[in-house]
Amino acid sequence: MEADLQTDIVVRPVRDVDAEALGRVHATCWHETYDHLISKAALERVSSRRLAELWTHWASQGPEYRMQAALVDGDIVGFAGSGPARDDDAPRERELYFIYLLDAWHGTGIGQRLFEAVADEGDHLYLWVAEDNPRAHRFYQRNGFSLDGAAHTEPFLGETLTEVRFVR
Image 1 (cartoon, rainbow, N blue to C red):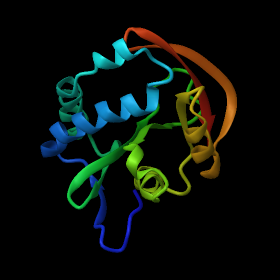
Image 2 (image 1 turned 180 degrees about the vertical axis):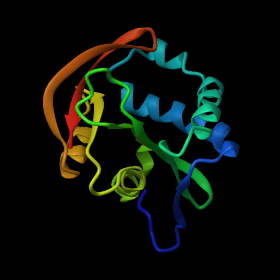
Image 3 (image 1 turned 60 degrees about the horizontal axis):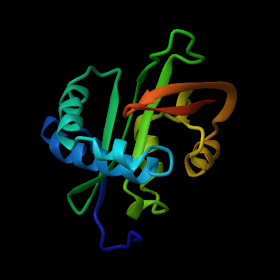
């Protein structure tokens, strides 16, 4: 689906009232992103309600956290977040936590707008991304990130996921 001139696209800070919609979009994005990496059974355990509870918490964090939502014609279609580094051996002070966008909106420029809303041009950031996610790898490389050689395997939905680290 391509954005056209009639489509109203807004990227704005996440609000408390967005939690339920964000939970639904988050769950859908996980299904679309990880269906080739995680079993169907594990993905079926994803709870949009539980993710909405997490969003209620994330939306209320301080100004050092940047949480943004992308809306098309008033409906949330994606989100992004960044904030203080969470790793003890962090290569940068700020971390890009996530950018998720519903598959239907890939290639429309919305992902780039989300990225720019949570990462200032001069920001020195790092992020973790699934090792087997070539689309995301290309996106981050276009935005000045490169692999630094770090990798780890994390528990994810009761299974494991190997992630690699990009740094800018």
